[in-house]
Image (cartoon, rainbow, N blue to C red):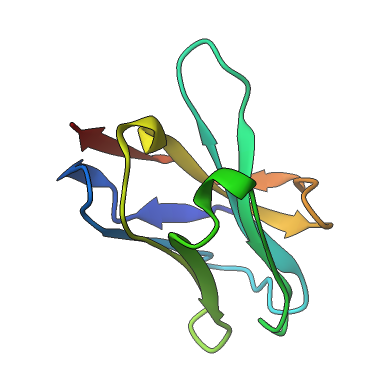
Length: 119
């Protein structure tokens, strides 16, 4: 079964940085856009960022623009989310998704990685 495996979450103070990774062992999404979503208890999962298969086009939710950067390494079948200037409101479980169309998620999700930002 296809799996997307996230890593890199953790506890960080406000203003700090984390780098999330999403690997796709056993399957390549080289020809597809991929992205990140996040979810907090009691809320719907929200779009955070996506990147085209070539890596030349990216999208972000307004609340993370200028602070988060999505990138990918197709040779490693991995997508990254560099998160800087983290805020307590960024606290959530972050999920990787593929294949995406614009901000619309596809059928493959990872199990998520917890990001907690303390004030």
